Image (cartoon, rainbow, N blue to C red; front, side):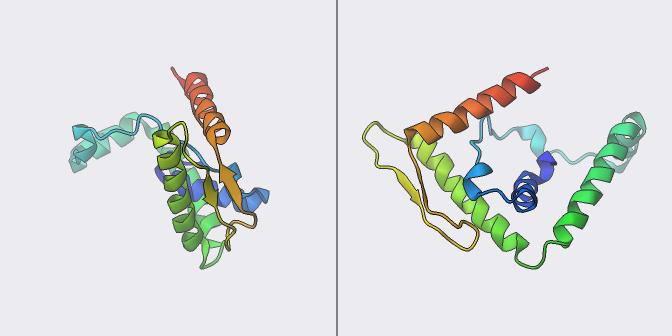
Length: 141
């Protein structure tokens, strides 16, 4: 799993593990825009960073290559499924983040990449938000 390609990683994992769509949904937390995200380092800065972080780059490049080889083997509809997943995940995030007390449940219809219809309710949102908090605390330095 690579953060740079998180949605692709989740869809690949879903396919390899025979999971359902709802097994890979996630809530985005602390997704803000920062001015430094727009910074493009010079070629010299990239070379220096690669020299300082050679092992990190080697590990990343190895897993990035492996990820894209596995994705290439998935067939032509892989990116259609990624697009579908992003759409559903955005709808779930919007629902969970903007949900009011008397809001009706979000229905996710059965589709080509989602064999069973399911409902997103307050409890489903709570579980997703709890998972994010647990993961955040677990990996916080």
